Structures are given as C-alpha cells and as structure tokens.
Image (cartoon, rainbow, N blue to C red; front, side, top):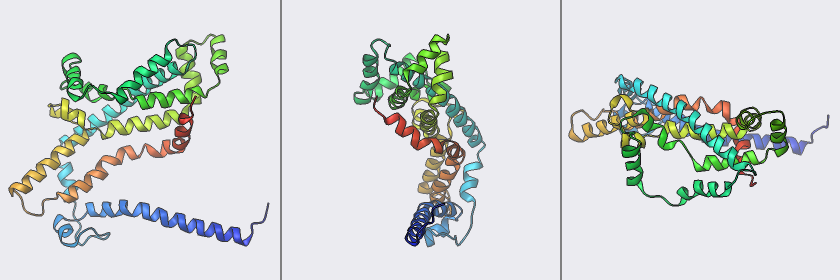
Length: 289
C-alpha cells in the first residue's frame, strides 16, 4: 500500500473540514425551520426565527391535523402519485423506446410532434375546455392524473438513454423470439435502471407537489389532494386573521413552515432509494444519440 505524504494528509484534512462546514450550512436552514414550526406564534412575532424556541408549541401541527379531511387528502395524494407515476413512466418509457429505434418510420416527425407543444401552446382556456368538455374530467380522480401523464422532457431523456444500448442486444432478443414488449421489459428496462429511477423521481415529485389541477377541476372535497387541502386551510387562517375572528396567536406563520414538513415527509423517503442512480441517470440520458 502506497504511503501517503504529509501534504496529502493535510489536503485531505482541509477538504473534510470544508465539506463539513458546507454540510452544516446546508442543514442549518432545515433544522432552523423545523424548530420554528414548533414555536408559538406570539413567541415567533416577538423574538423572530431562533434555533431554540422561547416557547414550544404544537399549535401549527394541531391546526393541520385536527381536520379529519387531511388524512383523506393524504390518501388521495398517495394514490394519485402512485398511479400517475406508474402510468406516466410506462407511457414515456414506451414512447422513448419507440423513438430510439432506427427502424421506426417517421420517428423524427413523431419526435417533432412531441417537441412542438413545449414551444407553442394553445393557452390555458382551450386546454381546460378539452379536459372538461371532451375528456369529462371535471370532479374526477383522473383529473389529477391525466393532465400530467406525458412529459416531453422525460420522453426525450429516456429516448437518449435507450439509444446508448447496443442495437445488437435488441436484435439478439428478437432472434430468440422476443416481441417488442418483452424486449422492452426484459432487456431495455433492466439496462436502464439509472435513468428510469431518475425519471421516476421527477414524475413522483411532480404529482406529489401538484395542486393546480385540483384548483381547476375539483369541487368535491373528497378528492382534494394534500397540497390543495393545505392551501385551503392556509387561506382560511389568513381570512380569520384579517377579520379578527381569533387572537394574534393564530398560527399563520408557523403553519406555513409546518406544512413544509407535513408535505415532504413521505416523498423524501423515496429519495434515499433513488439518489445513487440520480447523477448517472441524468448523465446517461443527456448523451446525444
């Protein structure tokens, strides 16, 4: 084993110190906001944001969870995220695979068909009318899923990744009797784990954080997703504060911060399983084929 020099040891030491300081700088705001969410509203107004609260309070979290509808909204969001991610990944993956095959006719024209809507848009009103009058998505669970089902960015990211797989593997599978779907699921997908994991994270975050579809399409409270439910609660708190229905201790600021931890809790558990693929997936999918 090669012996390390003193200068190398000193360099490693300072590098570790720099990384430690940088990590603390990144983690500190997260820790600070967590303790602020545990601070009473009056204490926050008087003393400001502090790492150690003068007065602990769970009023913000009690405000969030006192309504049983919040648990139903959690269920709606989890269902939308799970179903939407699977369907979107399937459609974007199959589309990207088809566009990556040289033998597919008019694949460049199809790729342009995907690309044009990212540059030109008919506008919000025509899109809304299509979703409500033609697809009849108003007050429907699928109104939270279908409008975000296809992402051009994800299709092209997957297509570029699939292009890096040698065509000889696909040809060998077809010689052995594999059809296009079996080739995709048994050959292409296992070889594309990094980019698929990365796209899964993108899609899952998009569905989890979305609240605009509920704002436009959903009037039934039983179908409110988590983000939109928290938005409505926040609106009611601000209205109550403006009209003077409650005292100054109404947790408006601490509520905003508490919602951060309520919303990121479940989805952040997904990241540790995907993060080791994240950088590699982006780099592989970014290679121009």
